[in-house]
Length: 102
Image 1: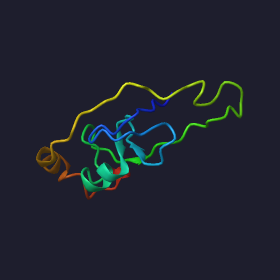
Image 2: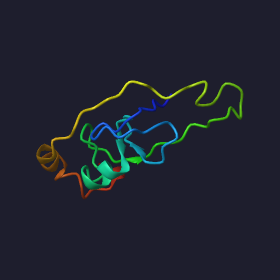
Image 3: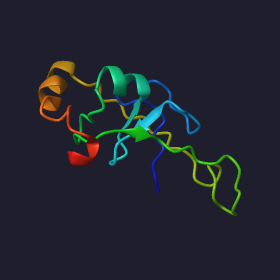
C-alpha cells in the first residue's frame, strides 16, 4: 500500500493526504511541487528517479474498507534537507534524461 507521508522531506511543508502539491518518486520519497521544480529539478536525491503527483486516497469508502479513513496517511515525518551543492553534482548526469530513460 502506498505510504502517504505527511510532509516534504526537504522543506517540511505539510502535505496532508488530500494535498495536490505532493510529489513522489517510485520509492515513495515525498517532496512538495516547489522543491521538485526549484530545488531538485525533477531528480530524486535518493534514487535519481523522477517524480509524479502523489495520488489522493478517497475520503469516502466507495467500496467497503477502501478509503483514507481505513488506510490513513502516515503521521511519521521524514525530514532530510537536500544539500543543494551535492545534489547539483549528483543530478548533473541525470537531469537531462527523461525519467523513463534513467
